[in-house]
Amino acid sequence: MNFNWQRISLHFLFWIVYVPLNAVLNCILGRQTLEEGFQDALIGEVFSLPVKLMLTYFVFYYVIPLYLDRSKIWKLVGLLILAFAVATIIYRLEMALIFYPIFRPGEYYNLLNPKGLLLTEFDLFITLAAAVTIKMIRVHYKSLEFEQELMREKLQSELSFLRAQTNPHFLFNTLNNLYVLARKKSDKTPDAIMMLSKIMRFVLYECRAPRIAVSDEAKVIQDYIELEKLRYNKRLTIDYQEDMDNPLTPIAPLLLLPFVENSFKHGAGSTTGDVQILIKITLRENQLSYTVQNTLDTETDFNVNNNNNSGIGLRNVQRQLDLLYPDQHQLKTARDNGLFTVDLRIDLSAS
Image (cartoon, rainbow, N blue to C red; front, side, top):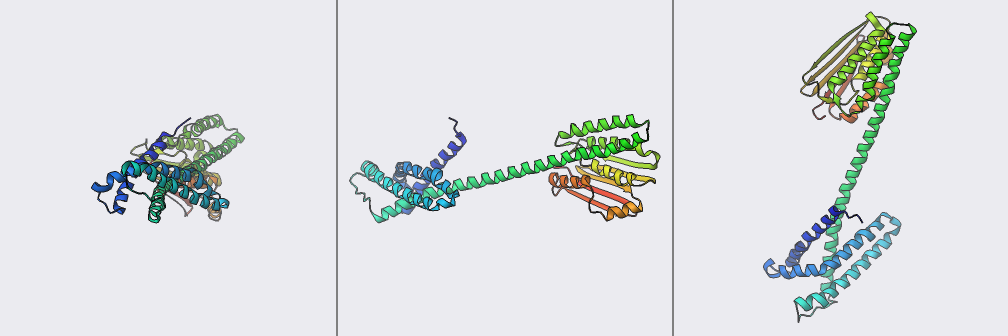
């Protein structure tokens, strides 16, 4: 049999603390000083303790569970009345037959004294109320912990689902690039496949960790840029800037790359003219500033502005930011004068 020693210890501690406290309460109700009445009151509490234990644990483990079944509410009330009646009888018999003959010989103890019965009921009620209150508080906090754990598991499941979406979405977009190179029978196709293999190794294996270094995220962005350069050649101008005081600062993986993907998709991928893309990563004292800007032609700018669906990639990242960095990030997008700009700020100090 396995015992929950922590639980047993807590119950034991409760009764150890309760007995002397109730003895003090009895002295106060009897208008006695502690010097005069504490010892007798403490002995009386010890003698009455078995009855209180039986009543308390009967209510804990048999009566209270009936509260969950509202169809048995009258059974619950009946059992409570019966339990108090039986406990009162045993309590007063114990006092009359054991406590008084030993500690107060010669004194008469009236079993049916109304005032004595009322005090006995009050004593039992106070004991049960104290025990039930503490139990309910513990149950409440356990429920809160359980709800918080469920919420953490729910958020983690959602985050895992979002990351599971990111990988095939990224692979799909990159395979499109390889398809274009293959259609052109480009000599750069083998190099593109090798770069894709390198990036996918990072996406599939290294990104399993909850956090990676910002420098690792920046490195995969640079690899992705090199892969895209193979497709777009000279009509693509990329200005990549990086300034980090602590490149090893941890960040959730694959939060920055989708914005770069989006810049190529709606920039170079949506126009036949020259395209400029600016990517700037700045990290100072755990404050990450990330800007991605790309040119748009007039038709693309019009279509994007009139389409609320920004694609699975950006919606996915926005949700991940909400889950991973609540109240610790700012994400702004703007379209102006043929430019689409993403401006992201993340406080990484709590990572």
